[in-house]
Length: 169
Image (cartoon, rainbow, N blue to C red; front, top):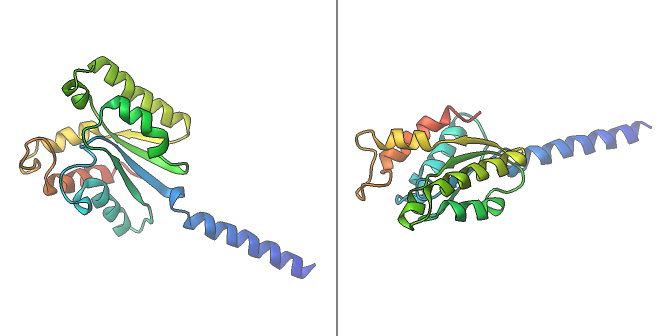
C-alpha cells in the first residue's frame, strides 16, 4: 500500500511539473498589424521587450508576436484562431482601421471586425486587453516614432512595453 501511495504522489508531482513547464499555460499573444510587428528588429519590438521586462520580474511567460504588416482587420479576424493557440491566457490587441481605410474598406466594418476578434477570444476564455489607445499615446511622445513617421522607433517600442507591463498580471 505504501508503494502505491508513493507512485500516486510521484504522478501528481510529475503532472504539476509538466503543467507548470507548458509555455502555452502562461502565454501572452500580441495581435494586430504593424503596430505589433513594426519595422525595427524583432528583439526590439514591444512584444519582445515586454517579455524581457516580465522575465526580469521573475515570470516565465512567453509573449508571442502575432502582428502582420499591412494586415486589414478582416484578415486579422480570419487568422485569430490560428494566431492565438489554445492555452493562451491573454491577448494584447493592438489594431485599428488604418489598413482597411488604405484598401478602401469600410471603417465601420473594421470596427465590427475588431469587436468580433474580442468576442471570439473572450468566448474561448481568453482575457483581452485593447492596447491601441496606449500605442497612440506612446506614438505621440517625442522620440517614439521611427523614420517612416508611422511606426514606433526602438525607443517607442520600449515605451510601449513599459506602458503595457503594468496591465499584464
